Image (cartoon, rainbow, N blue to C red):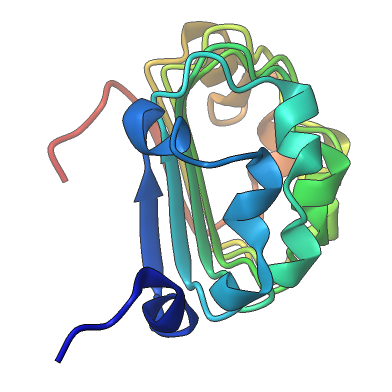
Length: 176
């Protein structure tokens, strides 16, 4: 029995989109079409041309089942666009190798349990709002020299923002 892709999309729970697969999409909005409403994990990886504007075009509100979002190797992505902050049920956010300068507004993700930031040298501080994330139990900041220094226990300027988080890992990328 053969199934068309359109019939299988409503059952898709994980999607990894890369530079190649992204080029097959007619628009960024295609990532958030109603058939993908059951998607639990979305990884957007290595799409050099994906900009803040493109991320704005994704209709994040339709991804109501999304629990994990990984933004990886997106050099033109400089902020967390407000539409991403509409994913109210998001539990894990991974930001790896992006051009992020800030993650302002992250406090909107009230169910966020885990935040991982790796190799984002332009991200130099955490927003004050991170201290209001009461469900955040794990914070990993790896290979982000300035940010790690600011989050250093007791001596870092951002330590008071993250002191409430039970598991904080700061340092080089670990093999965990």
